Length: 185
Image (cartoon, rainbow, N blue to C red; front, side, top):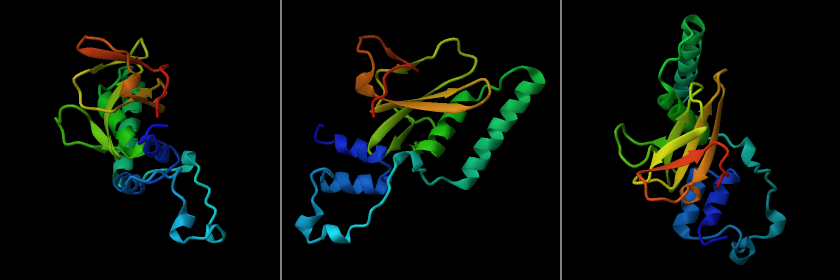
């Protein structure tokens, strides 16, 4: 584990963004931190089940309601017209904000779509209309991680977070990432 990989592991274990920020600011690695060196007895420790799968970031309930309404409208429109509304990118970004706690940048910010802790995140959405499970991302972008949001024909959402270093190297303007690509946390 590199010097700062523990911060990503903290996120995976369900630590809040504030806890991760504090750990990065202090520079302590939770695997090397021994509370007994600071006068705390292990007899006094409270056992906490910190399963990251149960971690749900705090989100604005109004934003969740808007997201659900947009998905409902998109489903209803498709049922009525057999045509999809072209709002995939916005739905993908809203999903990322709600499910991952990503704080989106202001509109038209270049380089990335938002931040998660200290990571800049680029969000790409795979719509049900796409024939391949692949996205293209600009190599010149300022992002550490790529979040691919996949929306199925029944309007269910899934996402994969991929480290930039896991993207194929090359000289072209764009890098390609596929849904099946190995996730890097």
